[in-house]
Amino acid sequence: MTTATATTSRRHRRLVGAGRPTGAVPTALLLIGAVYCLFPVCWVLIAATKSPGELFSTATLSFGTGFLDNVTELFAYRDGVFWLWAGNTLVYAGGGALLSTAVSAVSGYTLAKYRFPGRDLIFSLLIGGILVPAVVLAIPQYLLFSRIGLADSYWAVLLPQILHPYSIYLARVYAAAAIPDSLLEAGRIDGAGEFGLMSRVAMPLMVPGMVTIFLFQFVAIWNNFLLPFIMLGDDGKFPLTVGLYTLLAAGANQPALYNLILTGAFLSIVPLIALFLTMQRYWKTDLSSGAVK
Image (cartoon, rainbow, N blue to C red; front, side):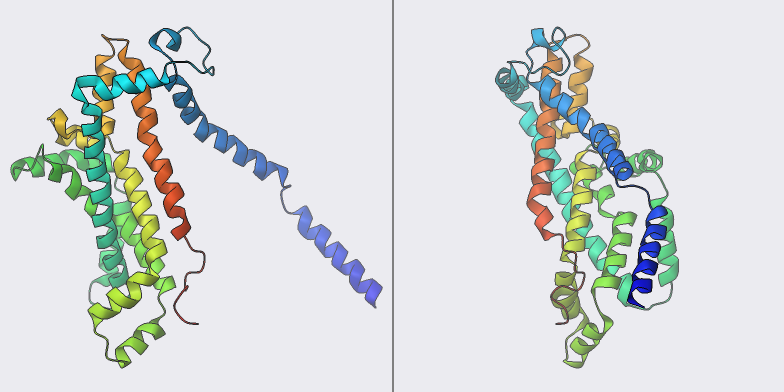
């Protein structure tokens, strides 16, 4: 009986294994995807180390000797305008991501845990908003902000980033999974108000989801080009993306600026890498961590 059971088990494992792809194929696909994503970053890093003479005369993947000189020249360009662009980017990305995370968390929690007329309609509109490309909204947003006198201001870049349908959708899904209804009912029985339940019970449980939303929004706003390009005319308010684009446009007549552009592009991704490495410890796999023991 034992021998027959073992034979049946081996046959079952062979049949199950036969339907699965070998481990080498997914691994190879992942490696190809990693190379595809990381190669541009490596190229920018290598190109940023080259002096103007080395940029077009040396091999593509050979390091140069001019990185420190490039950094010095970049920081000194136009009295340090790179630092101004970096500060503007930090304001847009940091402020916009924080505000968007707060709005998304409250909205997602409300949609997940409360029943009210029109809730399903609102959620359907949010799903529809995810499908609308940001490019379609850029011109109408500019006309709206121009009409109310906010064009070419920091608010013209910050405000459109606050309400993000996909972030609200993520917050709703996470709140529905991470916050037990029984925990909220227990809090109400103990006399806690709705605001207290949200601030003291719901939000702490949603921290991993909020960190994810913050990272997504921070990266999206940091890399955003079209919205500030349309909204802003004063280069003193430009983020790094638009500022480096102006350098690229000027580089057509001044090839020496190409080294500054590449160095600036490399330095602009360093904060994103540091942010991910710093905040990834807040991602938790247990959705109900800290809730019900």
